[in-house]
Length: 408
Ligand code: NIG
Ligand code: FE
Image (tube, rainbow, N blue to C red; front, side, top):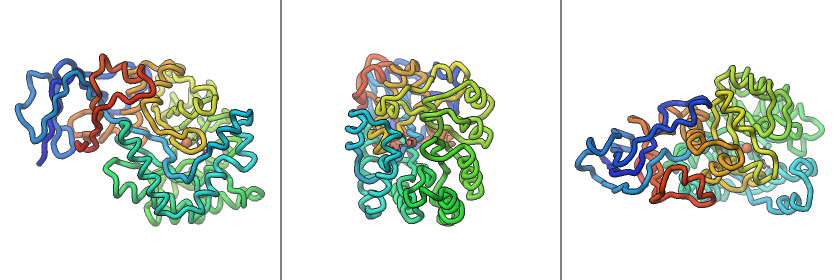
């Protein structure tokens, strides 16, 4: 048995036990001035005020002047990829749009071509480095998608890399199969054949090897239609995978009501949204996952977070770390953008990046807040004046230490 005590904290952001809806998100339950937390074998044993603080533990940390909060749960990333796409970045500066670049065979297809030529081991090493980078900036649980393979072998290669990351890394990881990220070049004239490849070859093999936890589809004009997405969701369910869907990044095509009806765990992006989408989300359990670093990087409009929160929709925040629309995985910058560009309050942004991120991975019983029994995945801040200082001081992590299952 190993115990860790952090005492004399300026603030202990315990957070909510489970997922919360939009209207409750401005409330961040917190113990102040002198609070302590006791960790035993990687899980939270007890929290409380200074007067109840235990006298000893195997390891003791003085939290004076510092805040403790749940580590970020980044519920949407494409962390396994090959190379980089700064040439497209420059093309966009010169005036081409993301969609024009995609239509020319750049974008996702560019990344897929590179990934197919890269050995599994090299992919693993690069991804591990990125994982370590984001963990150091406070991410304590993460989702990683495939989707830059677009052939059976390459998609399985990515999913095996994710499995290795799950085995080797301390941080909890969920794997999502995104074979339906784009129609690959060789199927451009025969989309039906690619969809059947996903249904008849990829999904059965993924299921047989137990390689994925969720199924994703990019529902968009440049990718898959609402009808195709629904068909692929159905195929995912048959292979035991619940849906998490990329939707409404550029166009509102009816994908959100369909995904809500098909009980998607989350719908992600939502840069554009209409009243029917809002109503569908209100009537479902589906979480709205917003990815503000993607519109930041692509110079697109930001999601209307206020409208969703005021409609009591549960909102999560994630990075979307990928080589095309978000070459970065820093959650604190996502929080700053959410506050500055989407008018989320700091407490709303913290809830969205912790407990609701965990809920978007169906992990809110284990992670995302500092309640007794949960994994001790936590951020100990530097000495800061208040917790609102975290998104305020953009571009810099206010982190002294990150704990994953009680270990630094
Ligand atoms: O979530 N929009 C779809 N997929 C990724 C970007 C893919 C890429 O450009 O490589 C996203 O933004
Ligand atoms: Fe994405």
